[in-house]
Image 1: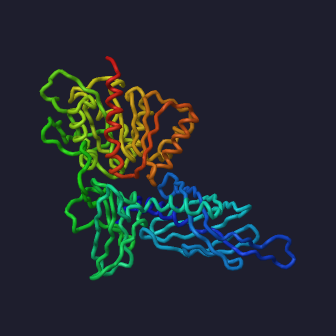
Image 2 (image 1 turned 30 degrees about the horizontal axis):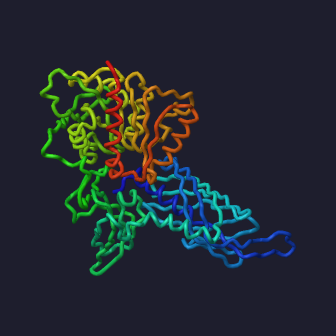
Image 3 (image 1 turned 45 degrees about the horizontal axis):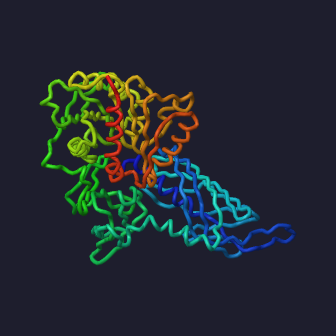
Length: 498
């Protein structure tokens, strides 16, 4: 059973791609008595930027570029994605049949555009429904017809997204396969597609075996198969991890993983402690995980700085240990002298966005509790907060609301749906804690939200650091920046004085 929130988020990615299919081409034609051309010759290759408002479907907005080919016959239009339409003067109306996606049906309510001087502006109103859940949204588009000399270079940029289909230096070939006798379509989705379900289509072979070979850089890769819209893990692969939606992701490791996230048996190791206590704020027992650096137990007098590290939506307090391997990063970096040792506390946030009772629990119960249990330095100079995805939102939200507690906030690919925190938009924003924001430029879930947040912070004159690099909403990206953000935390703690 697909989690509805996840299905809606996947739909957002699919619909924003499909919404861009509807562009233009037409031969010149003049109606009797008309003084203007009823349709112009505008067929060819089109480049579009689509800005999607998908907030009703659980999204935080999405902006992307697409390039495709349109053709014409009289005033009848079509494109290479199967959309058809007509042009009357400068006005275009499109007809796109409903299509099935994520267990529901997506339908255009209206799809119109206007062409002037080879420029196009349009608006697409759409809805998605599975019979129980329904949402709708709007996509606004701006585009232009490409000059012939620009087409090859633009298309080559689009094709870069699928370089994994061809051998490249530094990559390892791996064939993904699945037996699915009754399937009509099978896709491979995972960290290689930034968890989009329509990027890598698998091919049916003998004995109903579906397969696809990709050429991937070494390291760990999480993935699933999408069989006729249903997401399933690879049951032939025993290596799995929790997917955050009451299911499993499959995992392959090609070559070697990053040295920093691997266990080194020749160095001292810290302790990972699973604990819990009864929360009055939540009315239930609440678990949390603690990382104590090497040498903590032997040194009975030294106190340590504290990093509160938050997990993503639907996961748990062990996500940063299980998928992030943060304990291995800490052990290796502390041993090499790259960072100073500090304590990490990882609370359980469920799907709360870290607001309401979960905020009360963390701030008024958990932090005082762990300060009483472990030797933690007091004061905001020695207290930082970070987290990924939903945890990235929590890192910003809690640091802004509790500026007397945290001296540093490090959101990672934060899912910044500010409807959970409207006060952040409606008042003059001040941010005393140091702020470092990270996001992958290929992150189809969070990048647009991070860009919007950065623009807001700049307009408000907030001092912050924004670090982007190629990468998606994946553990490959987060593992790749863990050394960097742990170093940021260590440097912050090191420059403080008692």
